[in-house]
Length: 338
Image (cartoon, rainbow, N blue to C red; front, side, top):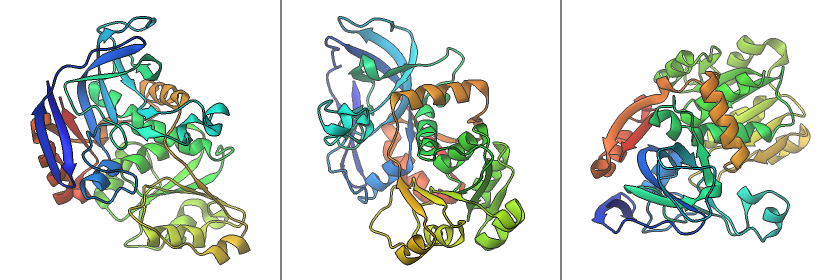
C-alpha cells in the first residue's frame, strides 16, 4: 500500500509498505478522506511545538471498516466510520480521573504517533466512531474539527443566552461558531478575510465582522449593544487579535484559547487581573465529543458543505500544502483523497 511520510518540514515522500494486520481489539480501515488542518500546516512549516520528523500525518479522516480483529463486537466490515486519534496511557492521574485527552503521555496520531496518510490504517476498536450511511466521506472527515468545537464550548459552564465572540473564521472558528449557535449562544465571528466571512454566512452565521475595516469594539457594539460579549474563543492564534479580545471582553469574562500558537505570545496580565478574566485552554476532545459532533452534522445544526474547498490525491500531498500556502485567504478545508 502507499504511505505518505513527512521526512522534514515541507518534504513528503511516498513509499510502498505492507498492509497492516489488525490484532485483537483492532479494526483495519480503508481510508477514503483526510482533512488538512491548521495544525498540519504548522507541521509542514516546521512550527508545530510538539511534532518531530519523520511523521505520517492524518488525524481527521473517514473510511470504511475493512477488517476487524479478534474480540471486536458492534463493528463490522463495510461500515462507514471515523476515529479519535489519541493514544493514551490509561494510568496517569488525568487518565484515571477521566481526562484522558490530556494524558501525561499523550501521543496524537499524525503528530507524535503515525497517522492515517496511507491506504489502510489500523486503530483500536474503542476509538472508532460509527457514521450514518448518509454521511459523505467529507462530512466524516469533518467530525474531528467539529469535535474540537464541541469540546471547546464545554470549557465554559453554559453559553445559552450569552453573547460570544469567536476570533478567526477558518474551519475551526466556523464550526465552533455553529456549535455555539446550536447551544443557544448569540455569536459574533470576526476575521480579516471577506472570503471566510462569506463562508460563515453560508453556514448561517449571521453576525460577522472584518476587523481589518472596523474595530472589534464597534463590531461588538453593533452585534450586542452596550452589553458587549462576556465569552471569547480565540481560533486565530494571532497575538494582536487575542490582545484585542482581552481588551474588549466584559469584566468577569472568559477567554478560551483554541488556536495552536506557532510560538510564545504575550498577554496583558494586568488587565486579566484587574477585570477578573478567566483564561482557559482547550485541547482536542473526548469520544463523547465525537458522538455529539456526528449528531450535530446529521441534524443539519452544523453545516459542512460550504467548508469544502479542494481535493488532492495522496500522491499530491505536497501540492495540497502548496495550494494552501498560495490560497490561504480563499481556502477553508482541503481534503486528501486516498
